[in-house]
Length: 221
Ligand code: DX5
Ligand code: ZN
View 1 (cartoon, rainbow, N blue to C red):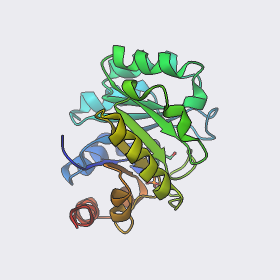
View 2 (cartoon, rainbow, N blue to C red):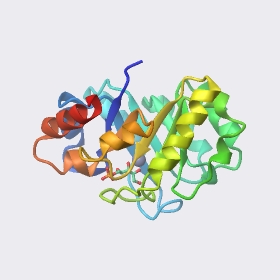
View 3 (tube, rainbow, N blue to C red):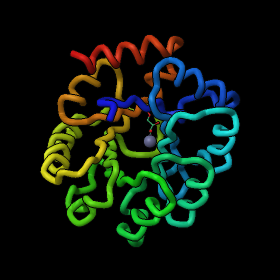
View 4 (tube, rainbow, N blue to C red):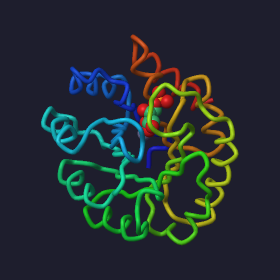
C-alpha cells in the first residue's frame, strides 16, 4: 500500500472545466480524486451527484475516486455512485439509520467503505464496526464548505484513531479533510493520518504541482 495518499478535493476546482481541472490535479501528482457530495439537507450546500462522477470517468479519469457523502439519507445513493465509478464511499454516521447496514451495502457494491467523523462526533461510533471499514475520515472542519481553517483539536483525535486502527489489526486508511495545507500536513501525518484531502490549498494556487510537491516534501521529513 502506498504510504501517503494526497486527494485533491474538486469542490474547489473550476466546475465549468471539471474534467480538465481534475486531470491537471492528477497530472500534478494527486493520487485520489476527493468528490464532495452535498445535499442542502445534511449540510447547507449543494454540489454534485453520480452523473457528474460518471462524466469524469467518461472524460478519462482512471484514478480512484473518493466519494464523501454529506447527504441524508445515505443508502439510496450508494448503488448509483458505485455504478458511476466510485472507488471509496464514505458517509457520516448521523446521516444513516443503520450504520452497519450502510457499510455492508457499500462493500457489496464493490467499493471501499468508510465513516466520516465530524469534529464533535465521538470515537465510540467506531466500536463495533472496525471490521467493516476500509477508511476512517476525520473532519478537521465542520462539513459544508471548502476554504475553512484546520481545527487544531483534530490532531489529538487523529492520534486516538491511529491507536485504535493499529490495535485492531485491520488495514484501514486514516484520512483527514479540511484546512490541510503544505504548512500543516507534516504534523497531521505525525499524528497518524495517511490520506490527505486538500481543496483550496491545491486549486486556489496557480501551480498545483508546486503545492503537491511541497506537501510531499513535508511528508518525507
Ligand atoms: C468540506 C469538504 C472538504 C473540502 C475541503 O465539507 O468535505 O473536502 O473540499 O476543502 P479545503 O481543503 O479547502 O478545506
Ligand atoms: Zn470532503
